[in-house]
Image (cartoon, rainbow, N blue to C red; front, side, top):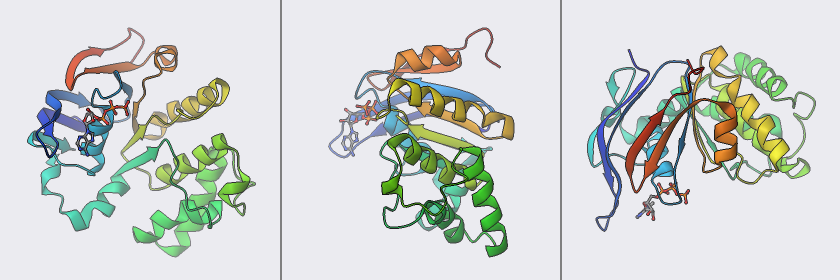
Length: 227
Ligand SMILES: Nc1ncnc2c1ncn2[C@@H]1O[C@H](COP(=O)(O)OP(=O)(O)OP(=O)(O)O)[C@@H](O)[C@H]1O
């Protein structure tokens, strides 16, 4: 069964503008892929329908066969244990330590206290910040802050991680490093969908690419080496 399915999904924003038109595709468990397209093509909108910041106007989005329309607004924090989100601007709490930033969603999600410390330290080690858990985000570089954002999303052990332009503010070397971090997640069972308009990065990773153009899915490209 597909992990995620878009079935003839359209999204109109208030005012009537159609940001996505009749989109259908599947994502397999543990798959890594990109969604690309010009500014305004609908990339962020597509991700918002997955992490439930927006709802479709027509069609259905299914996670493990279950229609996301059935997820009530008050259950969205629980949905985000299964679907993690990484934003370009990190959205870290600047007055809380690195440890607290990663731990907070786990506390909200009701993960037992005893497990939280272990999980936070494991993911911070994974993103190379095991020695910075007491630091405030302000003391970290932009790339390090982005890694905290990724650690925070990964700590909940999501089935799917969606990332919106996660390397947009980073220099090319750091961007490549962050992409390698994403590329390591499928081996641990997390599928990854990254919105990016940076074709250089997208091509280099040789993964499946969904191409949006004015809200339409115009290509679903799979390189020969991609699973
Ligand atoms: N809340 C909103 N209300 C009305 N229109 C919106 C809203 N959010 C996005 N749009 C419009 O929907 C279209 C798609 O926007 P979206 O942010 O999904 O594109 P994008 O491909 O992510 O663009 P970018 O690369 O510039 O971030 C745009 O024309 C945008 O102006």
